[in-house]
Image (cartoon, rainbow, N blue to C red; front, top):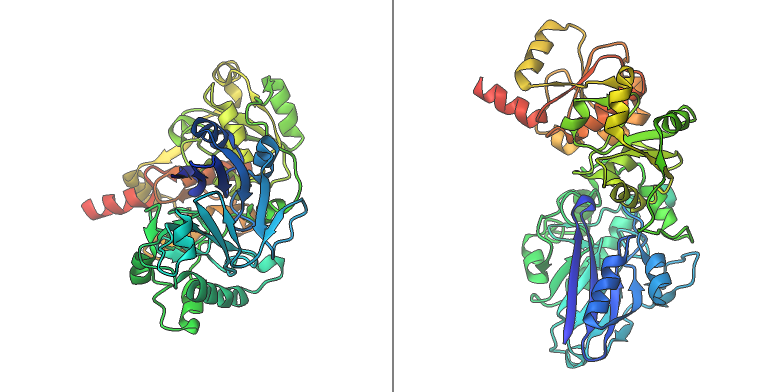
Length: 465
């Protein structure tokens, strides 16, 4: 009689949940994405009413859909009683229970990733919740416990909490609140592999408490001091938009209308907006972008982690214009809205006709094969090579002479590079390097290439040479 749906958004590695009781038709949604139509449609199909939108914490890596869902359904917004959002909410105490009928929820305060983080224990039957021998069905751990990892304690350093203070709390939360749960209880976190909310996240979307106790490096740390060292070292750089999102999630803000198209713009309108500081975001694949792109465009492909990289290289306070394969403009707008980048002023209408009509504004991007890169390194004495992967990736090997600047740090570290030098950027596979190369060109670097297939292709070519 319990309905349990997990929703997984690959491009943000974000998991959200709908839990309902079929006997009463009452349901809750946990940590929703900002475009909420799927939860509403599923609840309707199940004949259920969403009465609570529960947030495990103030998220930093996406804008949650709590306000949109509350507006659409009349549901109450729930946070831990430690949280202080700037809108009406229902605070829940540590240990507090909530009944959906037979299905029972229990809220556990689990501070550490953030001070107001909480986890939600789910009991399939009221009997399980009331007896000591009852095994909870699962626990929604937010960003406290991941599959193979724990939430990083260093994201809020800028908002007045020290990393070690939060790591200390995280250890206590894991050991006193989550570790006592039975082996069979399933673990459902808010994120999976690829998220910058941790460094070792599994590609699995759920696990069990028993499995995590046995295999999770952070839970196996022999004492608190070891734990704090382990979880604070080697974290990937947090994308620039994280603090913006963490603050925005506690505020009242504009609601997203996910059905509303951004306006179409002529090329003259686009050029005028760009002259005024707007950024043209080209959502095509690196291959399509390289074969012909407009002056000043930054390539962030819709096929990849689009919002995350837009939020890494563009500031939230600029106007954005989309260039996309016709039919994907609304998707582009909504995906940027998922990180609160709401300043999409429009999209370029008929982009291919525009490029044909304005050949002087169209460029071809240089992309080097691995052998061509070796040739370039031999022939060009002052070649500037930039590795835009994360430090953890670069630690396993870099192209000789390369300087490491993770793509999200590039806008703030341009002074370390010389725009007059011939430059090659590379990542692991070719997506981030196209973002980085287009950004450098937009910022006035004259001769920029990236490497097809990235470091992986270069390493394979070297091994086979």
